[in-house]
Image 1: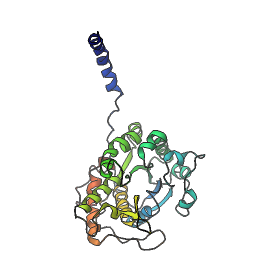
Image 2 (image 1 turned 120 degrees about the vertical axis):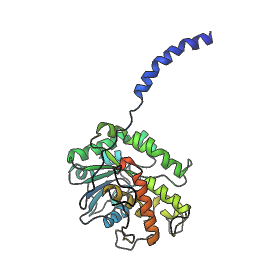
Image 3 (image 1 turned 180 degrees about the vertical axis):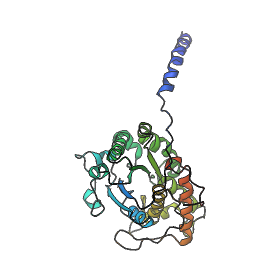
Image 4 (image 1 turned 45 degrees about the vertical axis):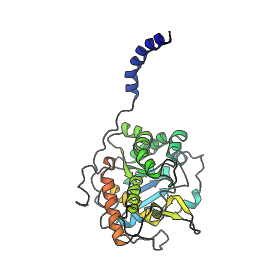
Length: 314
């Protein structure tokens, strides 16, 4: 009898198979290739401490004349907290100071920006499951689109704690297609294929630079921890980057926002307070710039799918 019931259930399962196929998400549409801007951009950054004040300041120093930026940040802040006025943002008063701070709703909706860069909190799985990350990503992206039909929208992919139990490199590799591109921004990409959010693959670049350093291919650094900050007592911060890491992430933003190779850019920069930032050696900077460009070119959703091979132009 049990065998017969199992046999009778088989047609029902087969009948459901087309439905399961129908419910499966369709592939993400390709992003239209982008043209390189002709001058400095106005950029809005919405996010948290993995944006921070140092990286956008470095990006401005790398960029053409006229680059300007504003932001709204927090500590561990998700996109829902930024959107909903009754939700608290940790460290809001500390990290949002003039002249770079501008209210996110007013700024992104104003149409004043050539580029709006959005990112979500880490742990990304929690942001998607508990804080409606996909819904609020689309809300912010739609606000930017409504403000200006020419504003370009970007998804800033970050990274995980170095001591992630599933492995730092493994999480970065696995989460880009499954979480960042499918679950967080996938609905938005399908709903607005003509004006998608382009990818700033900073997590991928960080992993590539760390791999190269640990293979002895970057002058002056040898471990991934060299990209992360430490306390005055020397304790490693497993998620927040130091000046070297901020430089890597700024290069990645430059390559995507400006659609240009970051080869030959300055490597001795300043912090927002005017002090001299820690820097790579000149040789290491060239190595990191090339790794950044090659990694960005390998990501079609960066908008650079039609770009020249690495080193072939900028």
